[in-house]
Length: 399
Image 1 (cartoon, rainbow, N blue to C red):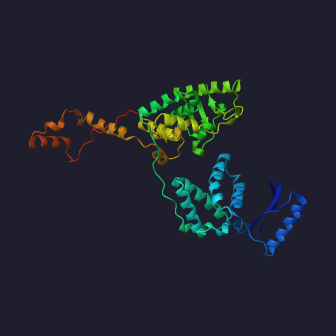
Image 2: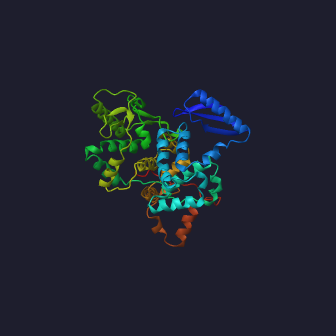
Image 3: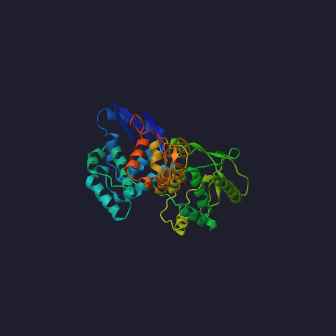
């Protein structure tokens, strides 16, 4: 049994005979809340009080959605809450006056059809329906329709990787306009550290070790994403430029708690104590100018991991840099380019070896059955098993 406040209103949370009840007491007075709580417990003991999920199911969808968000506040980050609110917005509009208890499979299918008519991606619609399902689970109603609702097929492509020419052109384009400085510096860090956009935005100066030239990712999408990353020359130059930029914006020396990408959007005064929200507009304009419309910022992470995979870097080292927890996740990102695979296989034919002796134009020297038999005989030892040779040697492919 517990009393607690939510927006200055007292609520009660108690259990009777194993059944949990959570109710608003509609009062800001503590003594009145105590009296109301005792009355509710008495009603629940006599079986005259509806359970929490039954009452939740009687709410109109917008009210239920607001209550759902309030209950999720202690469990989600601020950015995740904003994401949930964004997904709930079209749901609130569609199910404006509909009670949760009246949402059936046909209601969900109609919502999906209307959203699909708006040319939205299947993934966006699936995420919205997933949010709806969590609210209906809270009302103990999702299981009634779950078997009839199937997610829309989603694209399973992993991500986009740039050619060397595209990468060079993107950087040259980014340097062409001062207003793209933030997008350029963020891009440089992503390409040279594998960092996600959320990790870059959450970076503070106290996370940068200038002596060792390493940075610590403390805010990430997953626990595995919290890691230590050495800074190469390109990344270090970007960090130095970001430091000078912040000094110019604020007019004084850097402080450890300030963000590397400070909030400086719109007409508000720059505040390094807050992180930048986004560089989305600049990124879209930059990629369009570079002839790479549709390139996601997250694709830069794909590209960086791919380049590492094409090098001689071990899987364990790549996973440590990128923050992955398994080889399966590494395989998901490191889709090595076809050209690199072709070059690696071509290297096998550059220097063929037979029993350790280099031969030239071997296939042109098969002059007759006797020569062919002799070659086969030389390749097989006395046991009848082909001996190990050094012909299958892989070489490092150019990145």
